[in-house]
Length: 115
Length: 116
Image 1 (tube, rainbow over the protein chains, first blue to last red):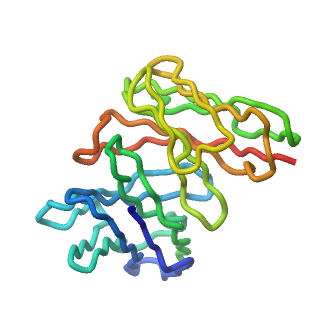
Image 2: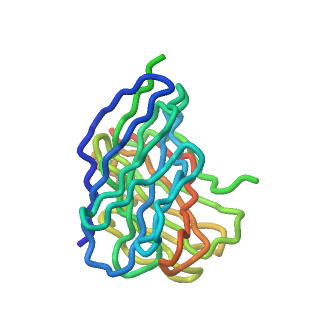
């Protein structure tokens, strides 16, 4: 069965610094994808970035990049030049087996950006 | 564009009462999902609908029923609410019905349900 582990319940970072949020996954599917979502205090779920297991390069989206290490089964999110608006919960997710884009999520990491 | 719209945003129920959470998407997506979010946990899949006319159980379906009314709408019903169903409920949708490529899920704003 798939599993997502986020071991950092809370993190803080100084504004303009970079921060890495950890995510490890367990899946037996030969082809899979990793997602990161942001949940600000307002509650909505915002998609940030996606990495497919066969993608050759690490995914990047603006200030977000994914440090994908397949052998270690890790897909860490790197946020560069942190901003106060980055303060939020961050969830890593992957697809459950059986298709249909069913996602399984980690417990999340709460990031606080300090001025 | 509205995206995924959930109603109501907040609801308080007494144990044993029933209610339906409504969800509608205007993106012509095929697949729709209901998740619940509890403190300290990530989102957990309750039910999903891969396409119009089909529904199937997710990780935590007990105590819930769903209806895919048409391509746009997917409702979640609690027949006899229990305090353990106090949670934030999210509806989501995506274009594809098979896991390939990104097929990013778009989420609604959430519905906060309290069962006393």
